[in-house]
Length: 464
Image (cartoon, rainbow, N blue to C red):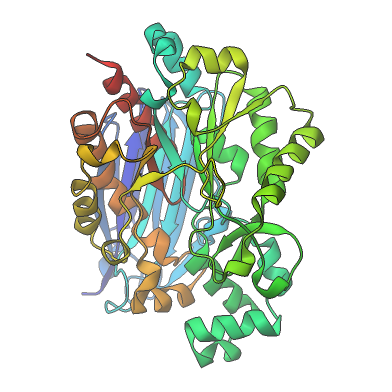
C-alpha cells in the first residue's frame, strides 16, 4: 500500500507550551493526534499518510497546532497525496512565506520541506519543524539579571547563536537581474544548459532553493535571539546591478546598508543586548566583487547617521575580553569581527569542511565538531561551530530545488540536523572548548531553539 510520510520535529522551552501533530486515519473519518509537551528536549517522529487514511484519489492533511495552555497560537498544514507524494493545499508550501512569529510572550519558528515524489531524490520524507519558546529578544540582558556575576565576566564568556549567510532571505535584487545575460550565463555554468528552458518563476524557485539560507528578516532574527551575523557584502558580479549586497557566490541578497540600519535601529531599542557582525568575502565568484575597507567602514558611519544611532559605539576584536558591564556602560554594543582584508580583521577557528558539510548525513557534521580542539583555540580570536549542511552541492539537491517552492535542499536537512547538533552542543561545549574564547553556533534558518541552547550553554560556561 502506498504512503507518504512526514518527519516531524519540535522544541519547547517552557510550560505550558505544546504542539500537536496529526494526520487522518480510517479513510478520513478520524484523526490521529500526537501531542508533545516535554520541554528542553529535541523531539521528533514520523507520520505516514497511507492510502487507507484518505478517501480514494484524495489527499490527507498533515497538520500541527502550537498552543500555550489552551490557547491556540498557530497551525501549519499540508495536504499530501499518499500515492504520488504531491502537495495539495498548504500554508507552508512557499519557504519564504513561513516567517517566524514573535509575540511578547513567545517566539515560534517553523519550516516545511516538501520532498520529491520519487524515493531516489534528496529526501523521500517531508520535513516539518516547530520550535516554540519564550521571547528571546532580550535574552542576554535577562541572563545578566538572573546571573549578576556574569556582568563582570568578559564578553567572550558568551555563546552566541548565529545566522549563516544572514542576508540570503531577500529575493528583490535577484528578480531584477533574472534575465540579465551575464547572470544567465553564470547560472548556465552552474546548473547546465537546461536553465535556458526554465520559465522565470521556475528559475527564481531554483535560485531561492539553492542559495537562500534564511527566511526571516534581520529584525525577526534578532528578536529570535540571534546575536552573530555572517554577512558577505559585495558588488554584484561584473557590476550587473549597482549597490553592495550580501553575495552568495554571485547571487545577491539583502542590501548591506539596509542590514546595518536594521541592526542599529534594533540595538537602540534593546539597550541590554550586544550584536556581533562578521563582514567577510567568503565564497565570492571573483575578487572584483570585494569593496574596499574604506567603503565598508564609511557605510557603518553613514548608517549611524541615517538612523541617529551615533550613541552606539562600534567595537572590534579587542573588546572580546572587556567585561560585559563595561561594554554596556560605554554603549559599545555592535562588535565587528570582520574578515575584509583590514588590519584589525579577526581570525576565527572554524569547524567548516566543504567535503564533510556537503551531505545529508548529520554524522558528518558531528565529526567536524568532534575534530575541533581546545588546544587550537588560543591561536584564533574566536571559534565558530557550523551546524548546517549544504546538500545543495549534491546532484540530488539540484533536482530537489526544481520541485516546488518548499523543496530547498538547504531546508531539507535543517530540522534533522538540529535534532542531533543542538544536544551535542549542550553535552560538549562546556568541557571541550575554552571558556574564555568567544564561541559561535552558526546555522541556516535562524531559530529560537538555538538561542535557548546558547543561553543554557552560556550559563554552563560561567559555572565553576
